[in-house]
Every structure is written in C-alpha cells, then in structure tokens.
Image (spheres, rainbow, N blue to C red):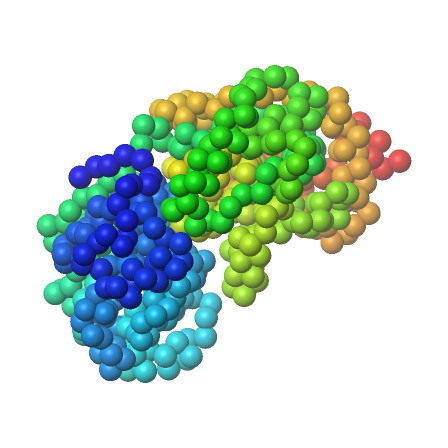
Length: 539
C-alpha cells in the first residue's frame, strides 16, 4: 500500500488493539494523531505481519515500530528471565541513542527492561546487562554480533520481533557481512520489520533473506524533497570557497526568526500547524537576485527560512556538511578563532563517543547556532527546528544530498532552505539532481568583498601553527575524498586547481599529497591571482 502526506486523521487513542497504558503515555507525550507511515504500519505489525517500510526522513517511522514493539512486550507478559524479545538494529551510535530515548519515553509506564549496545561503549558492562535480561535491545550490527558470538549469558532464543531501521544505510556503511551472520543466528520464528529510505538491489536481497511475505508500506510524495524546502546553489572558485562560506554564515547568523514550537508539533498540534502556516504565507519567494559577495545570498536565505522582522526572537539554526572529519574539525576551530561565531560546534566520526552524544544533545536542544558535520548527521538522526543546510562539499550520492537537506523543513508545515556550493568544474552535478526531480535555484556571488576576508584568514592561519597544521591535514583529506568520489565524471581530481584548493584552506602554498595524479597538477593555477593575495596577507 502507498500513501501520501505526513499526518493522518487517525488517532492513537482510537486504536482498539493498543494497550491502554501505551495510549495514555502517548497522549501524555503529546502524540495525538498518527503520521501516515504509523497509520498503515502499526496495525500490520500488531497483526504479526512482516513489514517493509519505505518512508522519507521525518515521516515518523521510529514510532511506527516502537509502539508495536512495546505493545508486544505487554501482550506477551515478558519478564527479564525471557531475555531479549525485541531487537532493533541501526547503523550508527547516534541513531541507536535516539531510538533508545523514544523507547524509554513511550515505555516509561511499563515494567520491561530496555537497553542499548554499540561500538565505543564498555563491552563488559553491556555483557552484565545482557546477562540480567534486556527485553527490548537497540544495537549496532557490529557490537550485536560480538555479543551473539562471545557473551554466553546473552539470552535471545525468545526473540519475537526484529526491526532493521535505516537498512540501506547499514548496507552502505559496510554491515552486510554482519547482518548476514546475525540473521543466521537469530530464531527464524519471528516477526521482522525493515525500514529503508531507498530500494536497492542489496535491500531486495536483504528483504528476501529476512522477511516472510511482507506487507509493503510506502509513503509517497510528489517530489523527492519536501515542499517547504527552498533549495539554492552557488558557483564559486576553489580559492574563494572559504571566504564565501564565512560571508554567508556571517549574514545568516544575523537573521532572526520566530521561535518554533517543540518537535512534537510535527505530529500533533493542529492549531499550531495552522498558525505556522499563516506565518509562512507571509514569506514571499525572492529567488535569483545577484548578491554582493554573499550578503544578498545570506539575506535571501534567511528570508526563505521564515524571517519576520520586528518581534522575532531567535537566530537561525544551521548545519554545514563537509567531506571529511579533518575538514569539519578544521573549520570549527578556524571559525571559533575568527570574529563573530560563538555558538558553533562539530559532529564527526573522529570525535569520542561521549563528545558526539554531548554535541548532538546540545544542538538538538539549542534554538540557534551552527553545526559543522560530516555525513554522520545526514541520516536517521533527528535535529529539531533546523532552518538552513549548507552542503559545502557535495556528497557522493544524490540520495545523500536528499538526506542532508532533509534535516530541515521537517514536519507537516516545515519550512527551511539549503545552499549547495559547486566549483565551475562540477556543474554536471546539477544534471544528477535534475534526474531526481531536484531543481535548486542559482544565487550569484561576486568576489570583490571576499579579498579582505581571505587576507584576514591567511594572516590568522600563518600566525597560528597548530591551525596551519590542521589546515594542511584538512587539505590532504579533502583531496583524498575528492579522489574517491563516486561521480568521477563530475568530480575529477585532475581538474582541480591546487593553489586554489590550498587557498580554500587558508594556505598560501600547495602542500604535497601522496596521491596518484596529484603531483602532476602543481603547475595548474587558479585564474585569480591567489599568490598576490597571499603575499598581501603576510604584510
């Protein structure tokens, strides 16, 4: 079955099968109306059917499997001695923690035991908890397989439900082997639900391996991305990327918007949705106007994000995506030292787990600020009330583009904007977007007002040895990521002007990179007089 839209007219309290405890808790949490994926998936899961769910970001799919899972524990009168009866798998630690929070919130009034296991956590402590019995377990595939193979006290013979969330993402990040081994070890007499944003050959194979006569529940939408999302792109030479990013962020951090309601409003508060809709009706489209070094682009972007002028009470909430952990960290440290950026943080795979969790929670709770991140934040994780997405480095896959911009404009009447940075050599990328019915509008930028910013950045980096070393490492990782880009007809490392790329990391000379094809490019120069500007920065 395929359904359209997000919210439905169906209410949780009208479901005759759900336990009264669950319905009461859902109501207390503010969940009144179901989303479309919940309306169609929950009854089928309550019937015991296997379900294949295809739903876009922000569709409410977490509750679509958490509610039936908790109801199953209640109906089976599960005790700790029965071990793990419901198992939920996800690709990242952040997603596991997010699902766990939903489980604990919705299951607050039941006596069953919940737990999470994931890479980076204390394995011995996890084993102790598993030995005592964890009725609903949320896990990453690698750590789960470890315990299945090595923790003898782990009881899972009574497993009744398996949920594979973000299944396509689990396959993308290399968990195919682990999933195959896990499925071979788990009891076959179980119910399985698989949720995936995309349907690939590998997903089809996984469905055949794990599901039995599944019901397909698919949330359709007329467009690949949500209607409330305004998408833009800007063409910028390598040498000016860093300065333009600063300029855009500087302008956008001055923008003020009306304070939004809680994330629960996406699901439930119709009155607020109507009010928000009336507010957004006042925001007129103002596309394709030339800016002055990013200033107009920033103002235009802020307007599309919901700016109201007088009486507004919060700044914009922004996410910026990079291709490598090192580039992400370098830009955070640089912008912290540079003028005008206080509420800034980063989220990437090289941060310690505790720091990643802390950063994620802080940004979720924040009403404004800037988060620099890698693709670790592109899928699965829920970031409430994000106004603007900047894709500083275009992703390998158009699906990742969609998931990145899906961090904003969430919910029934969600509004947001996105900006994609492209080099002149990368314009073919727009063709790939067009194939997915994505048509971002171009915003123009001139270079005149960027020279001063660039000189200031070069001076700061030259005067800060640690930051300069970070810049060199980030430059190298950028080239490595570019070299391994899947769309090589568009992202060809041999087309890059390396002095311009170096300038985009605040470097006045080209670092050596041990990569085939890179050394031959040293003679290629950007058309703009970068070295003259670099010399000026030293004086």
